[in-house]
Image (cartoon, rainbow, N blue to C red; front, side, top):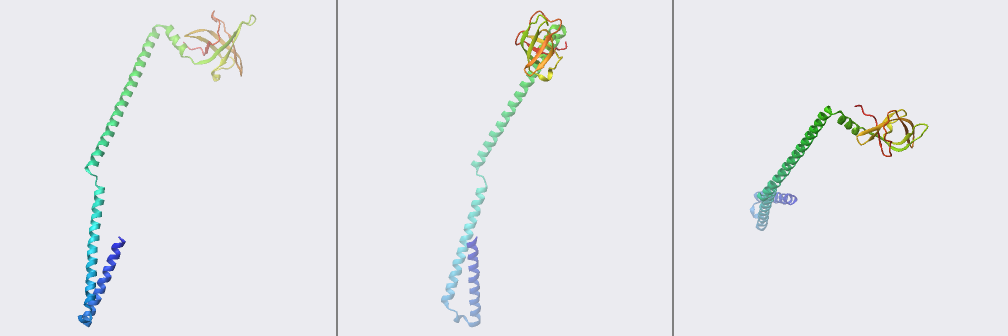
Length: 220
């Protein structure tokens, strides 16, 4: 762009010079103007015009190249189309997989619901099944550490507390073994090392064993 300005400026200067010479020739006569000078000016003007034409041609070629670079070639267009199709196929596969997962989860939920309904139907006919389910689903509150049989006081257990927020002095706990209850105990003492509980009347014949689970008695 700077070269074009310089050449245009030089052309204007030469044209002004030629105009001045022509004006001078009109005032003083052509004889006072050197033929060599006129020939030199005409040659320079011709060269500048040729240079202008050459620059214009280069500018047009550059614009043509820029336009071609902005327009994607057929090969590039086909490649973009292939990429777009591949992306669409990938998304379609992901959607199919998502639908399959949702259907599997729905089926599992329906199956579990049917199983649960079947259990409830059986429990409505058999109270022992319902009782066993409630016992097995009760939260684990503690675990028996030791059973101490005391002839004077009738014995007591020590146990580890697993859910401190559920245990306080006077809390009634039940000993769970599998899906049955051996008996109930009353918490009499709580310390940082655990707690002590005494069996309540009606305790079964089986003795508590280390590892037996302590739960809150379920409401049948």
